[in-house]
Image 1 (cartoon, chains in turn brown, green):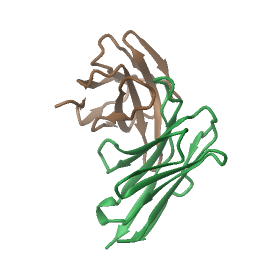
Image 2: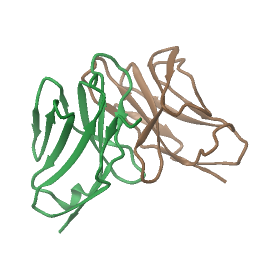
Image 3: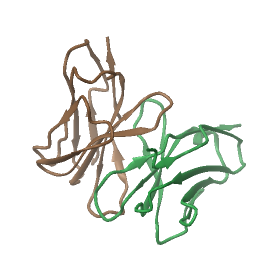
Length: 113
Length: 113
């Protein structure tokens, strides 16, 4: 059963702590993305990676970091520098070729307490 | 700089009637467009796409129209069903690479029985 798995589904973090969100895919996709969704807003791109060991900043990268050591995995770290981290985080991947759709995970709801 | 815009935050239609969701874009480099459906606290699911070489693509009850000169696309759902009630996102990217997938703000569709 191919797909994208995000974990955990719900995550609580104390202010000042770093936290890492997991994203794993078994679709053999090269490209992976992290988006953030806030209430009443669209999906905003945080980071994306087109190949292992390479990644680019999206539109709202400040306060976040990523790594891409394996094709299957693209973890996102929300650092203490992120001023407003409470949001719904979505990971996606895209297969070979430009004209293909992105597949999304089920999301992680991060709440700062 | 909102490159993909969905100017209607919400749309309400009667069951059995047509739903028309609109999307405008500003970046002329976009050549692949997608529509996603999203329920609360879940990841978006792909509905339908269109490349810039076409002006229409149909899949069952869903049809996407692309007007390149106006930089406008629309999603038609006929007939609308209560189960179609969700948030619909328009997305766009340059299809020649795995690059950035840019989303609109979303439109909340409510289909009344």
